[in-house]
Image (cartoon, rainbow, N blue to C red; front, side, top):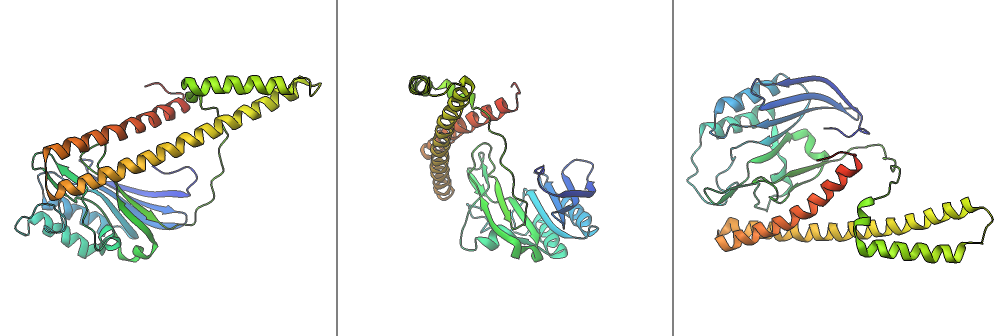
Length: 291
């Protein structure tokens, strides 16, 4: 999924029959890239990584390989609970893929002294890092940052990769009234009172009623923008605080699992879901869709 303002050309696309591998040769803002997303088998199969190796070997360009690998690269650094460091066939195939194609685990490179995880196993009560960004070594200089987010909606955490690029400045879209703000009874009463005072002061100040009408719209628009900006700041602060609490709880649980702490973590995630549900409702409203 590509933003409409990004210069994106797709010369070729390659995928496997089962829909677990999709690779595209793309030109993004004039830069040739190979973007590949995978979803490895849960039971483990070395042939899957050999297939990825074969596909990437037949494509020329800088590679960004991402997805759910369902395999750890290191039993000590990539898992919360220690297990004997046996080299499985799947892990060996993954290491071979890294060597043959020349890939780097960019999160580990940008976070050399941090231990973090992307997946929580409910049955084993353990954390592991199986969602990865493996990129061509030549691309590492262009990476601004790579972060593991919180495990909020599923048992996996999103992983962000920020790449430096010279993109065109996006123009601000046309302003539209956020009708959702009118659901706030306190704000609605404030708007009614403000509009009443505005009209009492300005009626008779001009002979053209249309001028008064346009001025009143601009005045109310400023009130709506200020309220929306305040709500946005409060939501962002709340989201940031909740994500930090969730992250701290996850790291604590990865060291020592307790049912009571896990319940507290679930309650924090529920609070975060409520905020995102409201954002989703507003987005659907703007798209004039019904859910």
